[in-house]
Length: 245
Image (cartoon, rainbow, N blue to C red; front, side):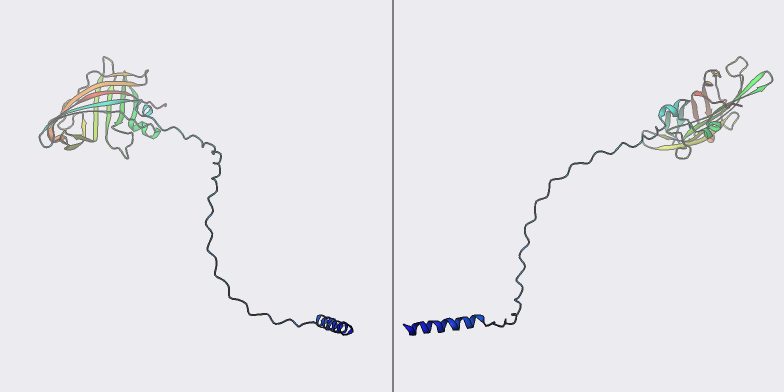
């Protein structure tokens, strides 16, 4: 019994001795090899679209463009032609020249009347041009231009002194899609031009300088671009401007 107790104390002493002794830490081990990267995860779903922003304010209104009423308010000239084309085929053609430039720099050349007292007579000079498709002498060069000098129009003593008419780059297209271009000047006493007949001129300076008349004449083939005898006629119905002196 005593021996057993002695052995127990001996073991207890040894255990305490071993426990109280400090053990030196070992060196760090070698780092392990990195593992393989994992696969990317699946993309997430798109978020819900945001709400539309509020509309911006309206911009300022632009200026109104020039309309047909402004470009045609000064009247028109009609033209009727008949004769033979340069290839000898008969033709007839009718059209209206209705457009007037409305910029002030064009007034003296394209839409003017001038009156001059000459003794007992009043002499009028009418100068007007009407374009075929638009009032522009840069991009559209098809027009009729008139210069008429007359004493006492629309009176018993009326005397038409001179008439000059220019038909500029007017194309005549036949039903067979063949065409020719007339660019001629016809005037009182001109070569190959018959008398320019104006039987019914009226002019009212108190109603917008309103001038109307019909006209007719013929031109020999050598003096017009058809190369053949040409009949020319039509009407004038225009309102002219007068500069304040």
